Amino acid sequence: MLDVSGLKAGYGETEILRGVDLALEAGEIVALLGSNGVGKTTFNAVLSGLIRPNAGRVTFQGQNVTGLSAVALVDRGLIQVPEGRHVFPNLSVRENLLLGGYRRGRANRAANLERVTTVFPRLQERMTQKAGTLSGGEQQMLAIGRALMAEPDLLILDEPSLGLSPLLVEEMFGLIRQLNDEGLTILLVEQNVLQSLEIANRAFVMENGAISLSGKASDLLDDPDLQRAYLGI
Image (spheres, rainbow, N blue to C red):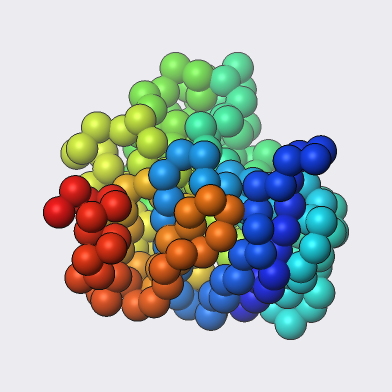
């Protein structure tokens, strides 16, 4: 579904991504792991059309989409839930969700809304509540629900566990697994290494703008280099 080859990008004269290679098959959860400042957010921005790459190629569902705009990528079904949720705080939960299907999925708005509230029952209880008054966990549910309204073929989740309590983190990863079980392909971009590897099929570890480790998630869990670097073992 997604094939990234030799991707280089940055800001001005500063190069952040130094030749990233990553592939993702339909139906997978693939985790992109790494600490702060290694280039994960820049990678997401390139995939979502917010930054043009300096070199490399991005292929999505068999088509070269390198350098396409964010609007064009959304129309093709590549949808991102950004780090920090970025809900519209002064709009209601319902209004936030409807905006998710503004460009894509509008014809199935009612059915998509029903699906979202089935996955996230708490959103149904808060439909008229302003998004800015929700808890952090509820805002994350809303951000993911808003993305689902656009009928994604590939959903990119950028740090969905950030700022959540341990209990809510467990719940969030369970919901991500549920969405994948229903057929949604997911690129999970996270610092939470252990729980990401527990639900992912495969994983890539990014360091200094390049991929340093990759493989089956179960194999990486046992990798001594990853354990030393990220798990403190």
